[in-house]
Length: 297
Image 1: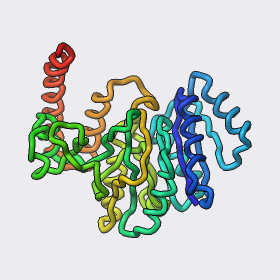
Image 2: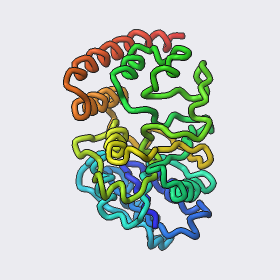
Image 3: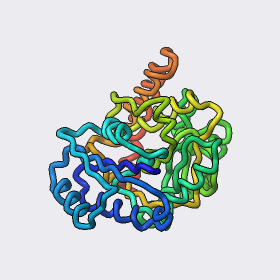
């Protein structure tokens, strides 16, 4: 059985579109599954609309859990994980649209590859161009190249595995996201893994609200299952609108910084944290200089 967890916050229409696209996956007709929608205290008409949608179609394997406050991505998903009944778990953003049979295709792949503990589909933008999905765990070296923009130079990523690899549209024409391969972590927009993973390492760190919780979780997963892999697949595809399901209006890059700092605080030697904070401040300064230049070009 498969459990699909969707966290929703003020996104009634796109959440309903997401659910509809799940049922259009023809491969799921032969696979028992459940959909668990966690509403993070929406202030619009999300609860009313989603409830009406579920009841109008008489969907018995889709249930809605309503929170009294916005718990964020990590805690809300943990709620879903606690009640999930499937042997496999799919974390799916509400701002996604399943194309073809992406879910069943990914599930069939993972169930037949015991060497993998997790996999993701190829994420596409609304115009069907490839969207980045995960990369390699943060290290002192790849945060250094990322913060100073050195990972944008040709060949740098051949020597230092990038925190955020480039998509094919980048000027270096990277082919990272154009082929099946193992990588350290994938985004929570589409993250499929075995329930046995959750049974061993538990859920997301409750101290994370949003940003960075995926690679922190998969880092713990890597420590617990060092012989298995996380895979990026290009066969199954989904559209990810990106940002539409965000639970906060805080600047994404600020949240990214906070996630990196929290990761190094928890998992890396203490001496690295001050260095990381300096690098992030340099990155912030560079962005404040470069971004206005690009805006006026």
